[in-house]
Length: 157
Image (cartoon, rainbow, N blue to C red; front, side, top):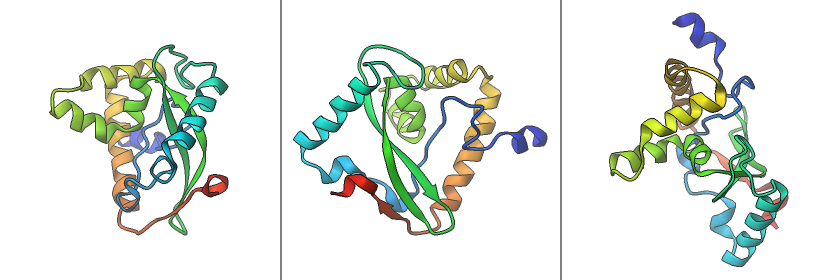
């Protein structure tokens, strides 16, 4: 088990679909919050078109979500917006696994299906998911001990 833990890192590229946990000091700090609905809709629609109305991770068609892509500078505690990706609901729930857990506890989402989606997209087991999630939550806990600056990059205009 410990060997597996050392081989799975939160940003390990072997996983096509990663969990993304925002440091607690940055919760609700996002571009959508600062833009007008009209401006956000322009970005959202362009993102969907750029991805040909398919999920940028699993390729699913149907309803899409415009997901902000962030980079984290763990030395200077800066969270920088670098772009957007179109995601299907299930990939989006994996990205926001904390929210998925809340929705599941309210009976609004089947959490087991979210885990199954992660495993299918990444060609891994439920055990791999659980180990990976533990590592991601440890990273989130470390990051949440600091106050992060949010840099909207080229989008801050």
